[in-house]
Length: 302
Image (cartoon, rainbow, N blue to C red):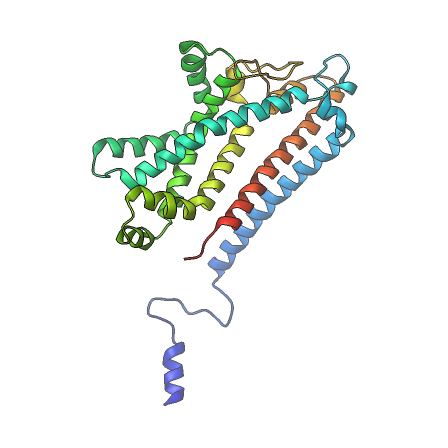
């Protein structure tokens, strides 16, 4: 009886192909090898590009690149201080504008909005469509509406608002997914104990959704920090020898500075551009590391 039971238990389910020993069918093996080959090609190209940038920019990775301003006459003493400072200004105000708006929008759509209402469906469809719009379109929007229509000019404020519009759909979508991942039983238990809906959201839902919202928000800002096309369209300066002093100041950022240096004919500017790329990558890695730390620190197991 035991042997019959074992035979019945180990038999394959109807419709499932029997594997020969521990191997797998030829089609599955070929598909798996194709996946590994695609992954290997991508990793090899990425590592090669990173090694090239680091080796090319290593002679200029010193304090001059951080403390000196750009110089088109003497590239040996040129730096990227104005671009680094401008990047920090623009990204800081981008976060100030888009994160509260995106998170509050996600809270409304997930906790308050009636999905049967046509305007709520229209908002959701537009958010999903705007996430796929090319960045240059946001640059045109920022130039026509924010810079010229509202009269803000080609300033840090215009750049921050434009990048906020660019990454706002990503912030909303990631925040909604994080809120949606909180179990409904948490909400029901809080409401059953007499808490209001807002108290439930503020004290139960949002703390549990912090890891997902923080990760999505920082990844959205990581995309914004590397954008050059919309800022070039907005009139970001390619050569500037002063730091921004406020939201109404002219600006430049690292992607624009890299674009300016790489377009120069002398080889010294290529090394400068590579060094600036390394600095930009370090800033991106720092932001992504913060996202990973926040996710691990605030994560909860239900």
